[in-house]
Length: 233
Image (cartoon, rainbow, N blue to C red; front, side, top):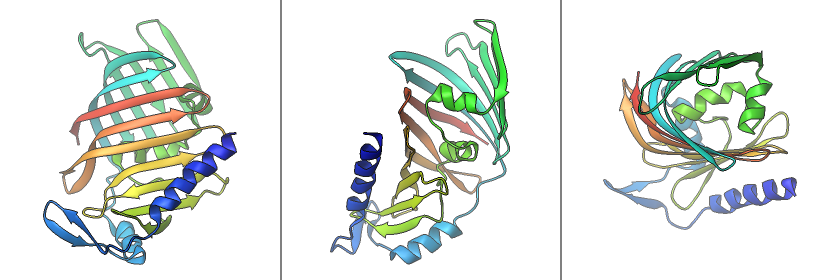
């Protein structure tokens, strides 16, 4: 059943990628001619790389297995290396949870229920219900593609990317044609599907970052996390 669901979802992406007869799309600035898939792929690779270190503050709402919680989250990241998270109560401002993650390990302390944990990164995958690689977490919050060199095809209103990973997982993404911003990317495994939607991109210090991020996990867990970014540095 899981393999069938993955196949159907990937097929929908491929169908959406079928090239239409239209050669332009309408934007707020007028008609913009779409690049060929080859040129679009080159432009995506040439986009300005994100900084090594990024810090962001956001409001977050998490719904997991029928329970919803709100918080204010402070995230500091070093690309492919370190992830530091603090989550505070949205009303009292008390920092309730602190977490620290590396590519192979994670640790956290919950001040509210006086619990803590230190162990392998696999714990994060179990709690979130998705086997997302550590390196992709940075991309989730910055709108960066999980697999930037994926095959590009032309869709009705932009570009569609598709790829297979070395471990036979699947990846798909949608790119809008004006600024080549990622509007959605999906990561499929044998056990789960991770979908990330992006909106409200803005330029910060020469880089384009999404300010609204929705993360949806379907698999061993059912999780939806909605982030509204207030500060990026």
